[in-house]
Amino acid sequence: MATKLAALVVLVAFLAGPAACEGAFICFNGWLRLPIICPRGSGTPREPVPSTSGSGLSYGYYTTSCPSAETIVTETVRKAVVVDKNPGIGAGLIRLFFHDCFVRGCDASVLLNTTNSKNSDTEREGPPNKNSLRGFEVIYEAKTAIEAACKNTVSCADIVAFAARDASYFLSDGSINIPMPGGRYDGRESFASETDQLPGPFSNVPQLQASFAAKGLNPVEMVTLSGAHTIGRARCMFFSSRFSEMNQTYAASLMAECGDNGNTNVNQDYVTSNVLDKQYYQNVIDNKVLFTLDAVLNSTEETRTEVMQNANTAGAWERKFEKAMEKMGKIKSDQQSVEIRKVCWKVNNNYK
Image (cartoon, rainbow, N blue to C red):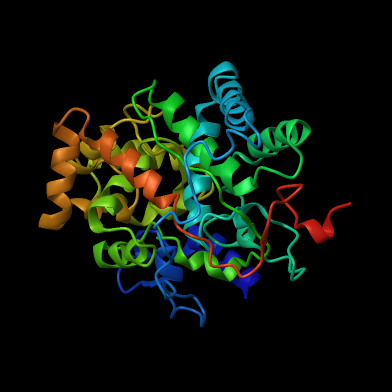
């Protein structure tokens, strides 16, 4: 099933153009827009709502057991983003954290390609993630250094969370400081079919709110976390169907950049593409955003109020983003079996 869904993502590049807009079916929780009925199992968010209480987590969790852990992560991220001048990796680390926490909770299941069930169709192969996730090498580098300092102590899930925190700090030039507790454990299962819990680019407001509510996040936090689309790049296949709905000057520049290749990547924020800031919300107001899920934030009174406040009030979005990322990081894993992985991409019973 996962293989078929991944193939459908590629098919979107050819079928989701302007001619396919009317009467299209939105499938896989907003990730696929097809002129055919959605395949069975294309999914909706699961119940019950995971806990965001942060039970078992604490700030400075490794102060005694591995005092250098958070510093190692910070310096690894600093090297990748600042020293190597690669803001795209920073954007990828923030997205990796989001995509981890929204599926099975914050448990590093997004990193696995070898699981307890020995399945190959892991989250990395799901339609939202396949050939698009970035930052794995930063997580692996930090894990290797931490294992050398403190063996079998720090979870990959915590490294993902700390890396997203640090990437947010560096990409915002120090304007965003996320309090991020530690104490997460690593899950042992990962399935591509479960990535339908991630809100897709073709989602409308009710679908977005439902996806976030399923994770214990409220409508304000939904609008706030959407602001992460102020950095990073996106494939043309996920927005080429709405060129006619955009600001036409902006649409023309995108069409020239995309050409006929749905896999072409473009900047999500055309103004401050490498900075984590509130520019995204002005872009929403100006109808110069890529995805349906971005544009619809200006379509209801509730979401528009948040968009206007974030765009026009200095520091408002940054403070809300800090709190929303902290809360998202407290989504508890729903896995029955957890561990501290020795290697982040495979469970310990497959470690040699």
